[in-house]
Image (cartoon, rainbow, N blue to C red; front, side, top):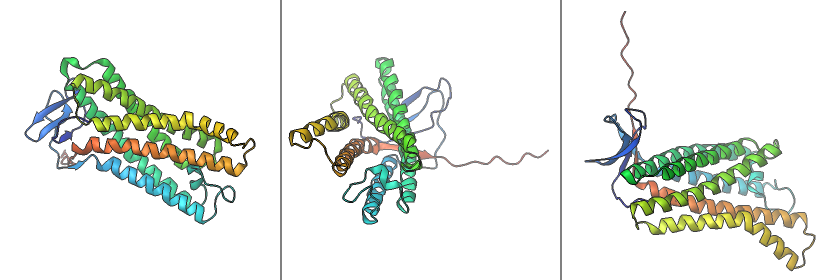
Length: 288
């Protein structure tokens, strides 16, 4: 999202002095590390964008695979019914793919959330005296909302809807609520941050995030009401169970597609962020 075209090196945010992460320009580009001392030297780096990219591809492939298996093996609730995403992880062999794939994706998303939080924190610090408490609070709220979405994604993949219906419904709701709320707080944060930076770069990415967030809100809150009104207007006053299930599944597919489209922008945001890989040093044995 930032306008700089150099690499960022994300170093550990541990406490050297006051522990405030800062952006320090070096010959290798700005490095993100804690103030008060030089960062340790990494062995090599990996591009941060590979984390959300791998998580997104894994999540999409997992859901598509389990959906196709559910339809092919006729593990749907009724003949002619489209399964909601949660129903594609109930039976075997889909359940193992569903749990393993989404748990791994949730872990990758959680690490990506931490890296993105560090990148935004560095941009805030780069503002100097213009950095406000509001920007920092919004960044932390966004971080915890993203982490909540990741945790609930892992939980809903572990507790299938057949074995723990109530728990699964609760964590599914928390996942969607956290994800949509993260979108909103992130858009507000980026608006305020871009305004403070007086930046007009990457306007398309910012507009993309806002539009997909608004569409996500619409699909979650407004679309069910619109569908209900349409059913009444076309004369379907007592819809069949099959129709209701298919409408609910299509609305869920729409919301998930919008979430995927929204988070594609964050992959591009992290394209210049490098994650250092540090060597593991084992101290020599102490001779007594």
